[in-house]
Length: 435
Image 1 (cartoon, helix red, strand yellow):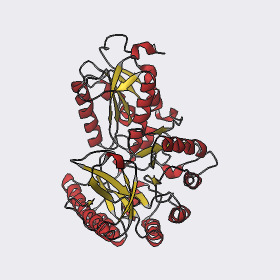
Image 2: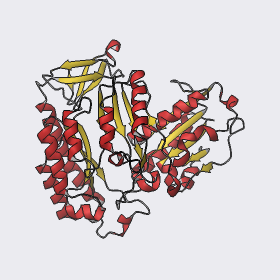
Image 3: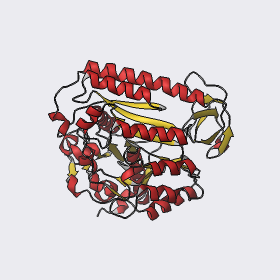
Image 4: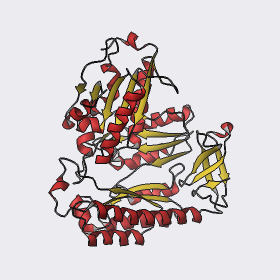
């Protein structure tokens, strides 16, 4: 165990890439280091420690991580540089070879980072690696963001037992595991006590919550719906086969569960879904979004789509496009397929060219833009409930409605964390309701 006295008056800089889950975990790391006497660096200060929490969902994500690591080392010369997260888990030796890196920590030990700091001696000549094999990643550690915003991210689940052919997440995050309903509720109550107004439930596969505990995700949202002090809970990305009719029906009558759904489709072609080894088909997906539209007609529905996966022939993409045109949604999150070492997708024939990936992405993003504008227009003249958030953007402050409509008004520090009922009448050029 490191002597904590060497941490006195030390400063840390934090860099996070990737998903909301990473942001929640970075905040937990920051709180742990603060308890040891290490505060966050202030503007224009040089840090003694840099913590980079990485992502590795695509080849581009790896590249961004390498850029961020070098940027952190350059901005804080002499700092002890620690890299953790999915990129560190999947490619520890590659990360250790990046100039400036002192310590690489795999997923299992991420939240115990303080135990491995050694600031009592000079920077090592080469990086150390603390790493566990994926099959040993079994523990669940509760995490939540704490960055002075009214919206908090709360980790309720980690890991994944699915084995989609394109994905490395099970290798990076381990098997599915979660906290208990009681401890998640307790953390939500703690967030409410420090001024949090909105909580986003995050995880790798949150619909799988409670596996092995005799609890499930439905039990969790019912319990959270009773937490006083939190205005609303948003459900993070949830697999369509785990977004049951019972959950949708409960959301429609709940007190605090927001009418906001983020559902990964990945492809609107049943042939491609089979190649991906997804656990649903387009018929099931259509039934879920149709029920949402029926029970919650003003709900925001965001959909993830991957274009250009191996096996996505031109006709299959057209099937995907036509399927998306035929269902209700508010926005698409479009990702270009990236080949990942060790995935089963590499054995699938038919490789899509970069040019075709780009063209397909552009078509879907155009469709998404049209739907998002239409969704915002459909909310003109409708009363919304907006929670105002931290942040001053050129004299404006931002807030979001229950169905994820972005609203701006002149900055007023006293309004942060308050709730306003309003009826927007016009959109600005950026697609934001401005009061």
